Length: 257
Image: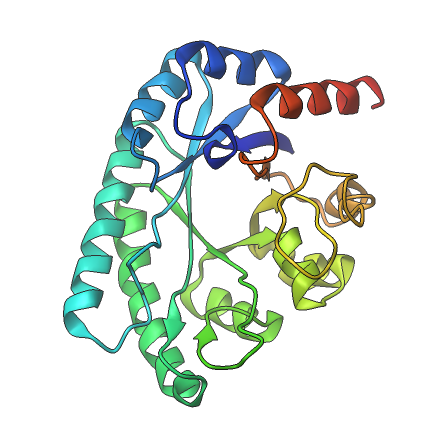
């Protein structure tokens, strides 16, 4: 398995030298954060320094689960446009959010709609040689609306139905309250990537590993046990840490291997 870095972690003002630092630190690839205003420039930087490329598809102002046909049309068009761009850069995977039901009462009918849309989106992705990775999300604790997928059973059902992959965000999983090893075992060969950060089990803080409840303490052992070979993507809070903080952390990890 390889260590990658989410470009959300470097903020909006990254330079070509930053990308060289990312590679020099031992990261094998990066995950583009599509909402960043220089995301296309970041694609060029990644290609120039020889980093592997994936993408976190945009989700702000978009909703794959919406009952509104106009919102869905825009969502589908934006996501497929980014999939096409990713393929032009030799990208490998596209992580995405499943959207949300407008109210928790609409969960069941929304899931029917989402299943159909996952098949449509995956058809486009496969045309471009891209693996779709559905990410687990933190549930709305008020239960006002329903985030898809915010429980493990629902997540597994959608991944298996559409024959796509899963992106396991271990920080989200901790807040969801599910066991890490058990979840990795349930995902099995459907696990396509891991988002790595730490938190206190209550909020999605995106701390460096070891600065919260040490969620990743046994992660690599579990991944090895279940023969995972995909990317482990560091997704670290850019408002708390600098790129140097992240690369220094990785250097210490590599020294202790």
